[in-house]
Image (cartoon, rainbow, N blue to C red):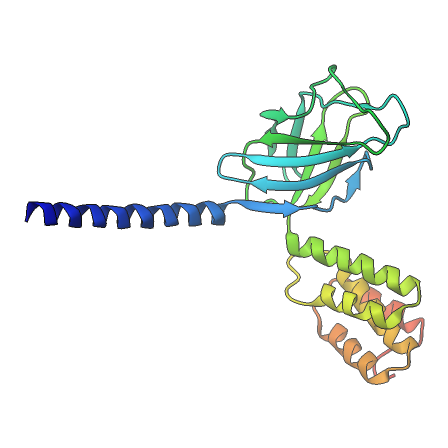
Length: 247
């Protein structure tokens, strides 16, 4: 009986440990947030790209890549005074440490044009409520900065979809552009942005240009029924092409 009871106890403990592991892993996955290739409103150094921003329970990890554009003499370093700031608030998060990047005045010297240097910056975990973030190097010479980094994967995807649709529109590939603009307007609009009004504008304009009156009127009615802040402006712009209710 002792042996049997001992085995039962160990089986129960293994099940408990396994369940606890699953809970902990699930919590870790739910807590961690990662934004791949987030878009920034303003960037000082085009050769410097944010690969990802990951927010964990203990850190905010910013992954960056810098590409050498010079035939010779290219170098890069990061000042020790770098911080994150809430673009729409006052919260500031100072740099804790960095990986794979020299601290100025030490330098990483590139060997050839097009060579990439990948490095990581570690900060305290930022608030999950922050949707727009600044990354600022506080130094005296050639300092880098990203302003208005968007921490929303869905919205970043919508911006890229709009850019794709606009490029197709500019190339007069109207039918190909429509799905891109429709993707912008799909789902909820959780972040205030001008891309929604512009997406309505170009969809309606395209259907007008290709002579699809039914779809033009349908999307115009959707615009009228929307709660878009710039709805009146979009309607006025469409009227310049003779597009209005009942047209």
